[in-house]
Image 1 (cartoon, rainbow, N blue to C red):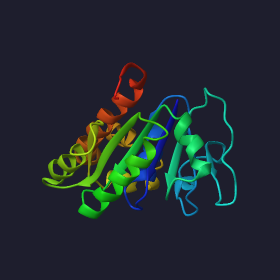
Image 2 (spheres, helix red, strand yellow):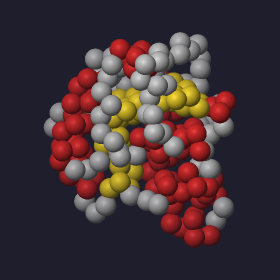
Image 3 (cartoon, rainbow, N blue to C red):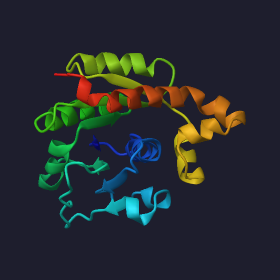
Image 4 (tube, one colour):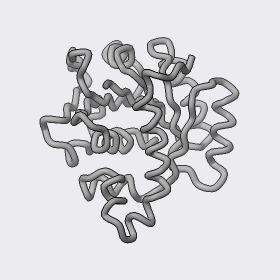
Length: 200
């Protein structure tokens, strides 16, 4: 399966979602990123991670490759192929007005290449999700998921295991990370069923 995570805005939890997916999904998914300063290589072995510099092309991969594209910045000719060939595109978004506007612009660009879009409102607190999802729904009818603010995501880079594995360890991690893990699993369930769902 090929999954693309794309956002015009930094700090939206894009790389954290990518690495948690890679550590959770079966099939040893690798990650390809165009983010020069990505911390993903601190978690994944070299055989499952590729950083593509600004002047390098994206590799041409077989259709059955298990890859997660972690794409930052604006869409360019290098990234359109990744978008076109992905089974699903996840657009993470912070629940702030300016971020929502950038997300709307991002979705408008992405759907030209791939309409299989999921929106993840990240780092939410309180009523953030209700506000942000209502704004997005004025423009689009794509599925929207909440991923609340949690220390679980930075913990991935420290522990080098998925949130699910941390929850499985029990104790305080299970208590503190259970809610965000359930939210992530709701997103994961739709990703895995992508071939059975018509979103457009």
